[in-house]
Image (tube, rainbow, N blue to C red; front, top):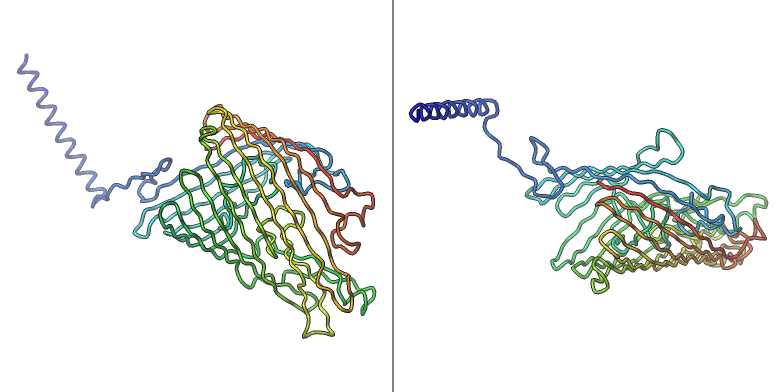
Length: 450
């Protein structure tokens, strides 16, 4: 019996070895010469069969439910400057919307470093059966130290942006995504520097048209022509010095912008600039995972770097050119300035429950223009102060699924809205408007990331 068993086992081994050899020969015949095996060692990525590409799909799905007091047009203006000075809005005070994001990340290790392609799309919908169209958030190529395409501006320090609902944009925060060419160099110990050329036409930089010579004196009844952004002559130059470690991170950023405007055939240009300092400081002595954030921004003629304000991306106050003093014309006569501060503290009460409290303040000023000798005093003057206080609690019962309840109080002060000739004067159109106004708003986000 033992001999028979030994014979059968031996025969089986011979057959198996022969079959394996035949199978191997068949594979070699089909795919020869054999290619080396490529493995992705990046967590969450998979290898695309037959390629050297590591690939990942991610995204999120979210529902946002929000409501505000009658003074805050939260549906159309997520920032506190959306609080209207006459004390009420005609738009919805309660709304719901869903939004989704999907992104694709493809990376390959090469002799030049990691070569990467990243694309992220997003769609919103609140009132249609089929949903809104996809919008492009990111689309860029990374080639070693270089980045080409649309992504976060080099100016930003995202770590110092607080946690809050998608329904809001907190006063003093900023989320610029622009087409750019960026070079980043690391120096070790967490230090790096980035320099970029970014599309200066972001958010269509505009102006406030101040009253000048043409219409009121020499051409009675002729409407003052609006100055327009003449042309994109040069990209913005943006730089950032960044450092990070176990303690947190910090960044100092700067940007230069060229304003080029034209009006009735005359044109002029003026430089604008912006600076940012942001930091995130971990506070493990208070609680595991706790941290503080702080961000400060100042802009002069480059308002889009502090974009969520009443004047948007209005960079300059424009005085109408004088045809009788052509050699002395000075069409762009003053730049719009803004400054803001924003801080927050996040505390983790447990592995699943966290709270964030914060506040932001912003000042926007479009000052009196340099006076025209033919029309003294006829110019724009505007100043607005905004502050916002907020607090939220988040619950993450399972990984990647979060419920966030967020409460905000916003306040705006128009400081009398300037002179009677001011370009933005709510008291001209509504003499009973309030000079300052405050309002509460609340939102609930339910988000699943993948």
